[in-house]
Image (cartoon, rainbow, N blue to C red; front, side):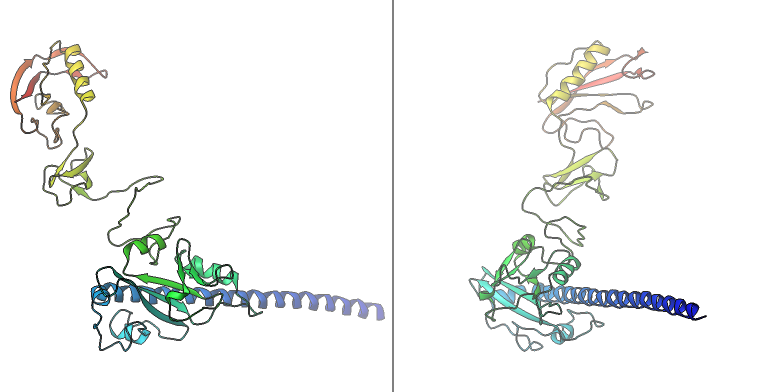
Amino acid sequence: MGKQKGALLIELAVVLAIMTLIAAGSVHWMAQRAEQTKIESLAVWMLGVQQGLQSFLDTYAVSLQQDASFVLPEVRDLMQPTLAELKQLGFLAPSFVIKDGINIQLYNEGDCPGSLCHVHGLVYSAQPLLNKQHQADHSAMAQWQMKVKGAGLIVSAQDPDYFVGSQLRIAHQRLPLASYAEGTVALLVSTDASLIQRGGLRPDRNPNFTADVDVDGNLTVSQDIQAGRYLLMPHTETLGEPCSQNGAVARGTDNKGLMSCENQVWIRPAADLTLLESYREILERYWKISIPETPGGFYATAPMNFTYHCWVPNPLNLYQDGRGICACAAPYRTKRFAIIERVKDYYFEKGIERPELTVFICTT
């Protein structure tokens, strides 16, 4: 009986030890998860403040840049607007929760006041992100940076005199405080569009474009745009209709390819002479007719019972046959050259009959 009691006590001790380990691990995991949630909440909250402050700058940009006497009765210090003031002015949502934890600082750069002046602003954490040893918490900073999609600025031991981002460095000497503690995180706003492009300052933009990018308005870049897969253009325009922005590109409502805006009109760019010579060779080979050289090119129409009314489009006509008509491009005039009789055998693909064609040339 004594041996059985001893074995039972040992089993209970083992079970108790296992349960203690599980409980300790659960407590540690819960503590970690709570800390992660705290960092993520801070990031989301700061993004909301950043959006409101950027809207504030966008609204009063000209006055802040060029009018040294500009004041807002609702804001005590324009260089340090408070959350309550931004909310009162409507730049933060009515449901936005006001709490401690961040500071706001605006500062000028350039020839101020004046057209060459810019106003920048920092939304930064009032306290640095520290671990239990009261040292900069690099894991927390990385998690915060991920939550703001790489748009954040951080004070690190490697660059203690700067707020540093992926493509941007801001010296502390530009700001009212002489220094900021390691582990301080910040988001930047600005009236300088080029600075925004370099720094990826807004939460709907990623500084390296390595993640999803959501843009509600126009996207402007100073260099080329490269797409690794597709460029999607759901909106369509009508060939020959007026357009406002020369150089714009759009899909046609006729589903016959892309168009460009030239001289305030949607056109299809002219093809090169290689295509014109290919058309000439086709007519000479299969219809046994010689087409003369003409400055405006040529085209051929077929009877309406065939698939294409404009059977051979004229590459030199900027409209080609995209509007369902054939015509010479201005300033050339149209002259009927010949009518070619229908041929009963086949050409190109099997089963496509050579129709009767009317050939037109474009002359001066």
